[in-house]
Image 1 (cartoon, one colour):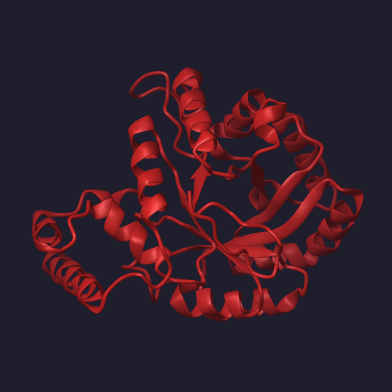
Image 2 (cartoon, one colour):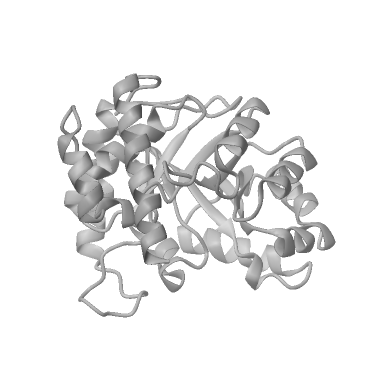
Length: 300
């Protein structure tokens, strides 16, 4: 496994982080809360045994069962090998007492005394106003002092101008989490936000590297471009290497749902390197983006 920088913080995250939001279910069509614990445990243990040291979950993932599952399987030996990231559910936060209630429930679910990396979940303009009105950052500072939270960050879904405002509003952010992939360079925080946060010393965690799986199964026209490109890579590997090529990316989260996906992504992470893509390879991404744009116009 390759390890990367995490802003100014003295922590080396694995290039690949495990997103526990798309764990396998007990059967096709089962409720989201019914995790296939045998398969999911095998996946998590394989990932950790192969160097993954960052697990991402949230209060709402799998209807609350993601945190419960992680708490169950992360015995002392495995807990010591990983950092857990979870999130304050702002849509379940309506008054100043709610953050305490939610955090205490999360600590019980995860069977831990501290959540290593705690995020304000899905910040946008409306939720950011809630954060300010309920003085949640001040509350989080107290929880850090108490040792219940290790480090504070936020995940983000809105325009760049708001992203910059949030980054600049608090000088103790450790990290942020943004949606980012080779088609989303100018979407939400985008490349501009990635570089801005990195310059400010924040670790930058990337979510949706495959646009919810859409980039893993491209249309025929795009697949033909990938198939002709050198070196030979799967569409997933191309997309991941594009992210890991950028030094500002601290780690890439993947919401994996099978052991095969875990093995494939760990293999990609093992091959990753900053500034390793050649000009010819970067040109392939330009061709692919152009084709996606063309196809989108046709569909419109």
